Image 1: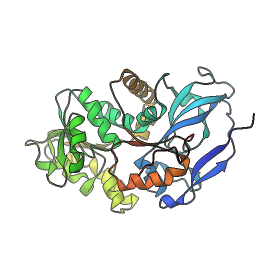
Image 2 (image 1 turned 45 degrees about the horizontal axis):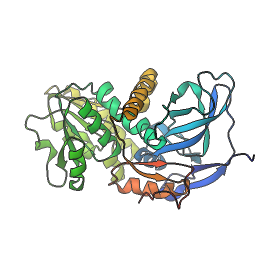
Image 3 (image 1 turned 180 degrees about the vertical axis):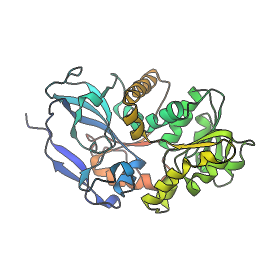
Image 4 (image 1 turned 135 degrees about the horizontal axis):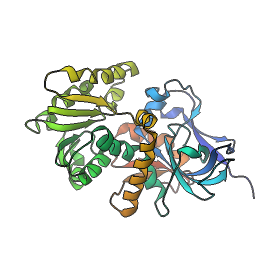
Length: 347
């Protein structure tokens, strides 16, 4: 039997989607404490566009060429020395930040979470970054309580949808900010739509919200902070507005730093910035615990992640264009075994 072929999505230089190329790469070998996986699914994230444009702090020190790919669900096809608890054929998941838009890759066994049998690999991949971010925003950062009144910005996006679904399970009263065309989706997910084009979200709820979740950062998070009630909490986790207006990374880092100064303003309102990587570094056990809980919710049918399209390796640049254009009602997932003619186009 011939050796399997490894192909990867490589970033040649920082810039637009045209800087992504699919190239042949050596087949990796699992070292001590590692496994090699055949990649079944790897999420394509808005965060990937920030990495590609050199706007993501966690990868700012890396220089191209490097392989893209923030998360992975794969099947173990090789075990390195001193690996226990896993066997050939196991399906596993990990958040890697880089390197998983590939046909094969190696992973540290100590970082892996088993994917229960029967789960769709693409749906499982949606949980690793987007749904994990939502779960930890709610339960680790926001520490939400049933009955709280919560505004979710970007509610039609991958993290926004997850916040609405998981927030509903937690018993929250939810409002979802998005463009008007997404109103039906937001109602379907159990929230009251807030149309950015027709409504001022700072005036939607007299008295203000208990918590606002903001991955957009319009006006440097100022308006979200003003929408809080006395004693309320702003949980920021992204800055897509700054990216779309071509702000420099330093400007957006200053927005984040300013959040922590607002706690000294009158009114007792608080603000914080959530980073999934920082929380995993501080509380590594939480990541595996929370991912297992999400897999259990998926397996029981309590949650139904939306996969907007399953994308082949050769369609990743097109998928990045779709991510930047916005308007997707679900997640794009790379499935390396798809051929372009069989893939569902991201457009």
